Image 1 (cartoon, rainbow, N blue to C red):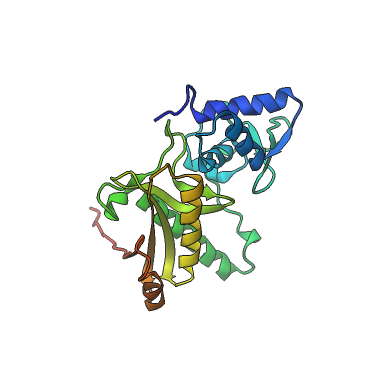
Image 2 (tube, rainbow, N blue to C red):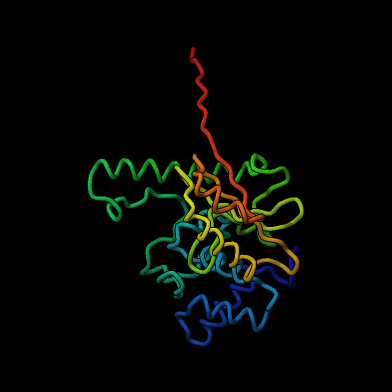
Length: 247
């Protein structure tokens, strides 16, 4: 439901134009959050951060969102720093997925293959679950903002990202973390931080925040670590392959 007369994407455009008119070319996410706090205080921090990423022409995570023509207005300089996009001198805006530059992460051919398959598999799992959240819980759906231009995939929580942010049938927020192999107990601290951030910066008054960990195997230590936490659930996933004979 839209809170103000204009959706957030329009309000953010107004902010950017206001900065440009004043001769300001660079700003931080804290500046944008402060601008909204003064003029549109009901807009949540997570929503603002997500829109900043969607407006950033060089942020590959913008592909998770519904990018409107003419809204590639920013160039991301760092985790929380932005400047105005210069189409004449900056690289073309990212409009489709490109293979990740493996040389930044790995050194050998074997590592390249392992990293590439793991990265692709993680994205496949994330994309599948984002479209099939009912497999986790009846009525669970992907979180979306008021005009559905941004969603809960790779949701920004103060410079870090949640794998999936969802909403249950009671309209409570659900933080979902994916682990490709085993889910160890240290993920509990990570999940707790994400849940606390969402409760403080994104949840509405009275809106509960829950957590879900999904891994190929859940360790005994993780079961023990979450046994006293009522708002965290554990799931194991399994893969299946279907073969079809071609005539």
